[in-house]
Length: 85
Image (cartoon, rainbow, N blue to C red):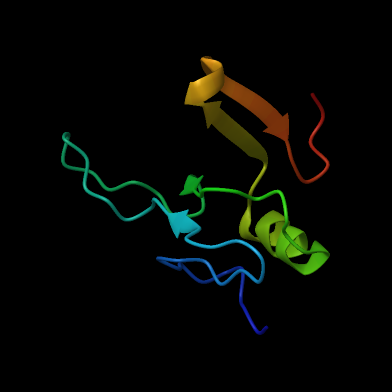
């Protein structure tokens, strides 16, 4: 799959993850716009390929925050892309 980590995608082109969305470009209440390559949202990244992982690292992903309502966990932070804890 051909993809460029320098582009601003609305929906990121992933092989084994669906509906991975960029949250950059949205207007804020204060009149500014959210930055691209800062926040993504997705359902499940557990089955991503190594190519998907490399793409996300090149795109700028550094941390994953997971929310599990049924377990009543607020957020679990997972460092991604070789980031230290």
